[in-house]
Amino acid sequence: MSDSKASQASATRKWDVPAIDGSSGQGYLTASRLEELQKQAWDEAFQQGHAEGLKAGEEELARRAARYDELLMALAKPFDLLDESVEKQLVELSVTIVKQLFRREIKLDPSHVIGVVRETIRLLPIASRNVQVRLHPEDAALVQQSLSPAEGERAWVIVEDPLISRGGCKVTTENSRIDAQTETRLNAAINAILGDERHA
Image 1 (cartoon, rainbow, N blue to C red):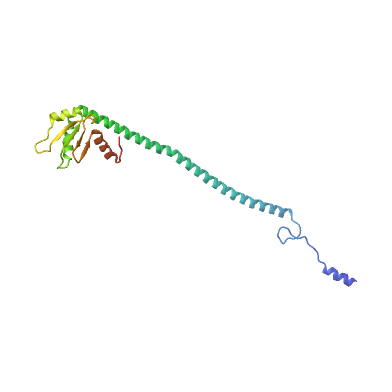
Image 2 (spheres, rainbow, N blue to C red):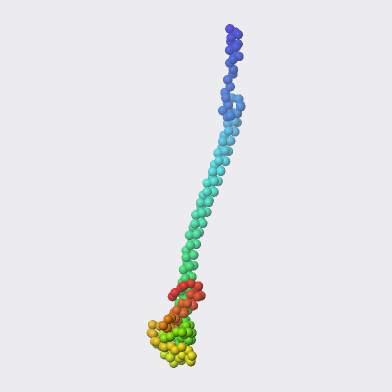
């Protein structure tokens, strides 16, 4: 029996507590090993939290920067609209001032209508017939006193038209019509300067 006990004893081995920390260590966790594992876990969690915090901070910063840009753009728009509005009002004011100066000049020196009539008649085609020069009644009297068709110049007739403003005229023939009223000429000059089709 002693042989069977001896063979049983040799078949039985000593059981060691397995290591739960993944090491090949012997037995239970020690306080120092537990502290080391705790520090390692804390470091890993800190690194992960730090990375996530940085990422969240960058995303928040990008979101706020985008919002800031939107606000700046929104603040700039009224100034763009204001600039456009002020520019338009300044142009309108300038046009009004020029018109007033032009009308004042006509009142001070109405004789310039003679040059307007001559210039407009020269624009007609050579074969024009039945030429009528429509003028404001006061300008018509001035032109009749001071100007008549020169020798060799086509004949024309003055027609008084109270709807024509002082300083301008309309010349009509059988086939053509030239509008040389002050407003028409002034608007043409303003459009040439402003480079658009602005009508007053």
